[in-house]
Image (cartoon, rainbow, N blue to C red):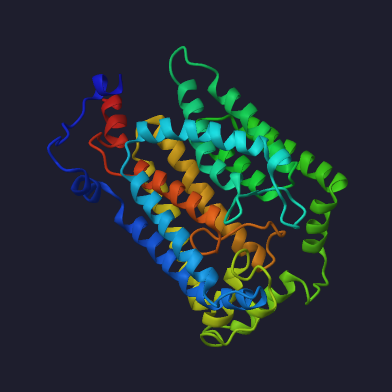
Length: 388
């Protein structure tokens, strides 16, 4: 219907897939992602050998695994970015059904690996965290429902997406995994806002989140312990936050030097949740600012490109993916500098982790697919025509 009203620019059907992909892809965002992956490999060389030595493994065992999973993530990213938005939507809906089923079955078939939260499936040679794969496909599902709700005589898509969000957040909170639950809720809130939600409703939802957070604090020892650790004025130097804070302080502006850092020998999660502490200690504030700039470039540039998108589903899904990518990076780094409570969240494309790397590759591939240049005209031109 949109094409009937506004018209389209004919596609060059004879153009091969790869040249068309290269011509339409956002090269700035893709370059930033590749640089982030390179930085992750560099930091993995510094952070993972101590853990490998502790576990009696080859010094570069975790680096090799990160390279393997990272390669799979890049392949997934390039393959997904070549798809049309309609194909991404179809595969995303199917992927959501599979990921949601895996999430529901976690209490029965999952394991906690001694960490107190049942978040993984152990396959022997590798573990899988369903919530990592659930995030991008949930965004696709919610955007599809909201976009369908904007059509004439369409279903109440916003209501359906809200109910779905509450169900997913409840399952994540039961693990408990409040970090991933907050990401899912945040991405839905952003998409709901872009879809035209009333401000009063958003304020009501925010109040409900505060109320639920208060209940969780009063009834969940896991949640209360992390909040109390964040609010206390006295930071125990022997905790992960204590080690990370001291490492960032010691790094200064230029760092203590490559391989000279000490925090990687003390932090059990130096190669995952607190990888930014290793970067700050060995390479200083300069590398940390570079990493922040790369995440900001990907997020802001994607949002800028999506502002010109006139298809509701593409605009909503792309916004959700861009925001969830940027906010996850912000939460990870915010925890390391004690601006936020501990969440147990990886730094996208930098931290070690098979599930997070591959799921991140799929998510960023979807985002690149949505921000590709398409012969649809600019939304500003459409608004200008309507005003005439």
